Amino acid sequence: MSTKLDPEILERARLWLHPPYDKNTSAAVKALIDEEQHDDLKDAFYKDLEFGTGGMRGIMGVGSNRVNSYTLGKATQGLSNYLHKVYPNQPIKAVVSYDSRNHSQELAKIVANVFSANGIFVYFFEEMRPTPLLSFAIRELACQSGVMLTASHNPKEYNGYKAYWKDGGQLVAPHDINVTREVNAITSIDQVKFDPIEQNIKTIGKEIDDSYLEKIRRLSLNPDTVRAQRALKIVYSPIHGTGVTLVPKAMQEWGFRELVLVKEQAEPNGDFPTVIYPNPEEEEAMSVAVAEGKKIDADLVLATDPDADRVGVAVKNKKGDFQLLNGNQIGSLLVHYVLSSLQAKGALSGNGYVVKTIVTSKLIADIAEHFDTPCFDVLTGFKFIGELITSKGDSEKFLVGGEESYGFLIGDLVRDKDAVISCVFIAEMAAFYKNQKKTLFEALIDLYSTYGFYKEKLISLTKKGMTGAEEIRNMMINLRKHPPVSLGGVKVVAIKDYQSSESTDVLTGKKQGIDLPKSNVLQFITEEGDVISARPSGTEPKIKFYCSVKGALENTADYEKIALSLDKKMDRMMKDLTDQ
Image (cartoon, rainbow, N blue to C red; front, side):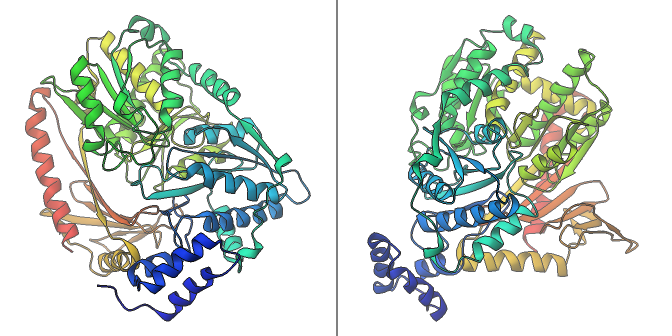
């Protein structure tokens, strides 16, 4: 049953019934009003889309809280206004790209039109391309900004708008705040310049691909190993997305000759017909690729999300069955592989560093410490990794890093997570260990034996719409007012509140500052060193709970037993936290 509609929301909706909104849009809004679809009206109009940790993302449709030509036009006008303020009387250039989602191309064209109408020269990708290529192109073409039309791994109803700055990274403070201010200053859609200046738009494509692929190829750490294992059997799925445009080419250029493309998921399709969610974090989304891996007895199974910035991995476990690796495991393997390979070559100089997010496994920090390489923590969202790389400039060298949500980067070609680069490095890593008669799974067990058996778990609770946002807010308020004394029977000894930038020793009450920007994240640290985090998502209607525990793996034969014990411990802890 529809709930009663707030008069203010109804008034916001009625503004869309008249020009300058087009007839189809007005008719769709009128139908919602006439049919008293109050729930839909409330969700579509109760607020404006805002920039989160990954830009703007939402359900496609009519309304101020939906992704459509007007909300994206308004966002681009605000971004254009800000660019002119930052670069007054200067030529400004931007790159616009898009993924395989429904309407991505037409929405990208509107973004390009608005930029051009504001006197900004636009490089427009002639066909869909991965998000990391946009990040690369911004720097390659010396642009001041860029926009990618994608909703990453969200369901098919979603689309989104990732805004980038001149360093190739997503908008961070103060730019994200200032752009939001400029967008909010637009009080009428009449203020948006939709009519393009065609001479300000230039299509690009293969020339950027070629430069990107050539520079990726130079990153290879063990090309001799790749040549020795060129027959490595690799199954790859783009899950109906943009990865198909570059990942197979990158693999070929690195020398891998036995790449099998998953036919059922090779064709770009915004309906994502073979999966529920096009998210390589999900077992279901990886199932078709894993089935192909079993069929051909593959060494490695890879899958990328629609905009090819995240990658999922399946490898054979001790029983010979394919097992999915989580983002923490993939990231830890990559960090160890990169640092150990550089050390073996005598190329691990003192100015290199690693970056991870605050909710990503501490195993990465332990590995970096072993190789005497600094490891920096940043807030959740790869834009903060990109920001740190930019802030350090050329005096220090970013080597490798990532986040638990399957986003990784090796080298500094881009300022965003990059599944194209990650795929070739994971394949090279698999070849390296196969040369030593090991699987990636066995390499992972070796890491646990050497550095400690870290296990992590993530629980995401979806809370949609206006009421969902209120629920999430209340959950965080309650956790701050009534923090857990213990979790899973283990005493909580410290609480980190990134919103207040304070870390509190529970036993003494002593507080210390946290030297990171404010963020709505809580972390509870137990006396056994476990870390449990609570964080509302910045890009999805979810609240996420992360748990990380650590045990000892003195004998690799005990892997299954220790894993089960740690899993049970995490289950107890997560139940206590989510029952708060």
